[in-house]
Amino acid sequence: MEEFHKIDFCGTKILTTVTCSAKAVDEWISTISDIHRERMSNFMLGLDIKWLPCFKPNEPNPVAIIQICVGHRCLIFQILYADSIPESLLMFLATAEFTFVGVGIKEYTDKLFDDWGLKVGNTMDLAHAAAEKYGVSDYKKKGLKKLAMELMGKRMQKPVHVTLSEWDAKKLSLEQVEYACTEAYVSFKLGMLLKNEHNDSTVNDPIMDNNDQRYDDNYQCLSTAVAMFYKMAAIEIVTRSIVHEIGSIRPSSDLKLDPN
Image (tube, rainbow, N blue to C red; front, side, top):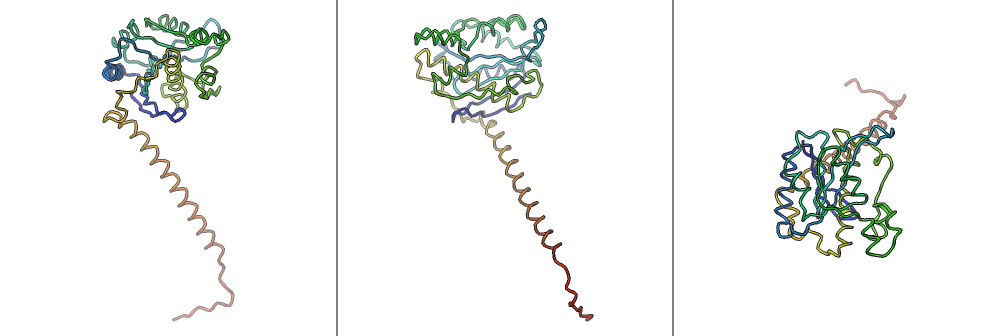
């Protein structure tokens, strides 16, 4: 199963693939490798994970989704429902030349290994990197949302009903997809900023190639559905108005009918 979305964050469109298919993960990694083949020796990616919130200390839930973002492309892999874990993902995460970035990244990588045996080769904690780069020790205590606001001037939305939602759902809501994508994308962008990388890894990315038409197809379907909804609503309003007007007409008592 695959879903394709074009998620908007502060005017930037992120092409997002949501899947539990090992084959789809293979294809995503292949696409990324092809697009960025000239930069693979010094590669940075945003990494995040989600699992069903646990309110009992000794009953942790396994990682449900893995989010990876580079440039304007994001993968949301529903590993909890995967038909298998592709070898390409194992190799991709373990590649020493890649740097996976995030806030609290060690906790994420430890959990990935404990739950699924996935080893992440090279990581960078964004909070610690920001504290070191700018000489502000307080940055070590800040989360992704605050770092995004202070360092990028971008406001992230973190509604509680989404952050504490059922991340183990087989069908993720659009809000969940937007939130998951945004976290991975912002992590990627912060990583590039902290490493003084002005090239955001999209220079060779054919954002609107034939493969990406499916992202626009989803939006076209959505736009068509919304337009149809409003059209039908307008027709219903007009119809009700006409019926009301007809119902308000009463025959005059002086009216004489012509039998002929």
